[in-house]
Image (cartoon, rainbow, N blue to C red; front, side, top):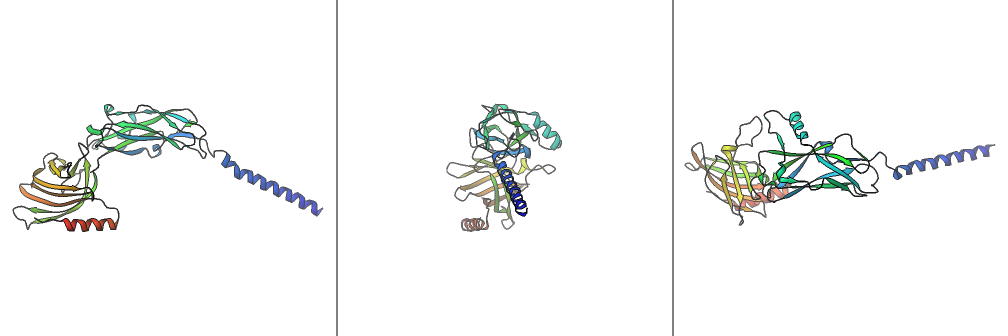
Length: 310
């Protein structure tokens, strides 16, 4: 009788182990949850793409993906549509009356040749190319495209986070975060000098070689004094890497010289300007943001070797 009980117990134990093994294998054989088709980035509402003013036509991409724990066995084709009213809803919901509002990218400067996106079998996502001619975009305006999935050949469209807002940063090869390391002097009294060390965001304007810079003052933001007319100027890198300076609006530049060092990503500048009736000069460097202490040490040593004094 005891042997019979042992046999029964062993049989039950073996059966339980087999069932457990089957359960362990099941998730690998089927998806753990239903597949859905969605726009990548819609969960975060907004995605950012860069547009380079140096290109006659730039290309950005939106992505369509299929959720699931297993690779798809066949191509999935989804159609994307634009919904400009989503940009208006975003402005109404997120921005105040004094904010710069987002506007839909002008229709005559971009195209989506084919709204159908193919997610290839076995691949996690497919891409939608959007072709944009950025030359006419203004540095002080904000632009978006609003996208939504219209249909899919397989599976279901996601029911939440259905819209993605794609906003654009205007850049070129010379824009970005820089740091100013310079001395400002009163021409009539050179001993009256000011050390000019601060971060400067050089903004791409006009073309692939020109950036806008704020002189001394901080960049304009909501609730602050608008410094742009009186304190902004343009820096253009010429073919021989010399630089040309020009006023953005009312900043009075009386003379300048300078060169861009592409290997170091440094602007070496001197310019004479008028501020509140006083003529001054600024001499020094604008260097691209460095990521590490060693990189910062190298640029510091380079500037010390190349520094000039009036």
